[in-house]
Image (cartoon, rainbow, N blue to C red; front, side, top):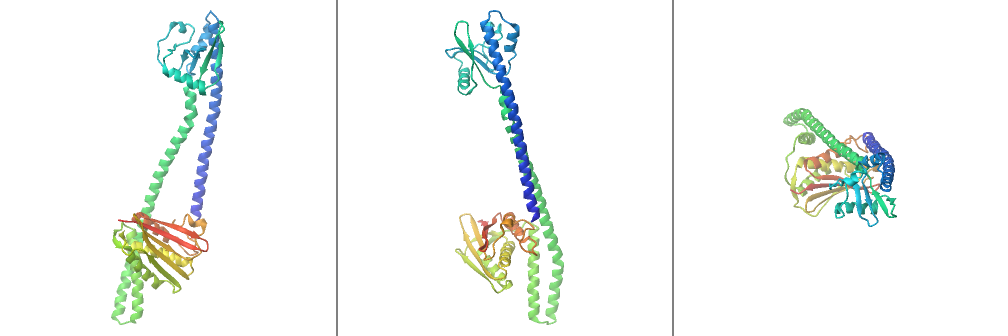
Length: 396
């Protein structure tokens, strides 16, 4: 159990670290954006003063002209009192250049009918910065509108792109790693199951031979029959492990009949104070399953119920269906599952029993979900009110 708590803890730490890095990245970028924004505002103000100087002085100043010409990033527009665009720069729109404006360092005259620039002006007037006013010698006024450079806009969104790409990369890497880990787990499961079946096979065959020898010697028949039943049970276990270690074959099976057979077997094994009730609405539910493995699942869940009830109580098995699934619900009157282990109850090694291995439900989950493409889950569990396991098998 500790391994899963540590795993969850490490996941939390890694997620927290990723969020911390993301927040720091956004904060640093935001500081850079604010500094660049301030710098561009100051630059726009300087450009406005340079244009104001050029317009209000008849003698061109090369130094002032250079200030305007060196602006290759900040989009600016010069607008008169009638809201007509007189000049613009850095809007990446091709128009015929007038030599008159080149002489004072302002390039690209604006055509009034240029819809693109008019839209840009409207955006700057609605959402942009406060325009810079220019007072002409004639008493008229003009305004310089400006907006953020492309570099500043890109810088604003860069951390989001960066975090997005990093997130996608991590998700892909996690998916590949998880798939690889699951494949390794499947190989381990299969290898262990095959080896267990192989190791059990030889002594079981030997025991069966000894049983036949005892029969020939006319040993106590009741004793021999009990031994034979136990050996048959061992053979069943071996058969189960051999099927776990390979891809089991599914065949059309009457689920009602299968559960009835499982109940008959379990009642002969369980304490007399355990009662199994079987409720069903349909006796002709047929779907493709592996009989041996599904029996094993029912046995595992019922044994957990017996342990939870401490050998005394009632197990209720219900068989129903919907359009797509056959549903088997197994309920007990036990103490309920501890909330601290409920989320990991189907993981290997997780158990509330002092001597349990924590493999029964893990095997059951593998059988139902990997081999039958179904679903097994804890439908409900409350302290002192028992637990209900739900098994869903696809109709085929």
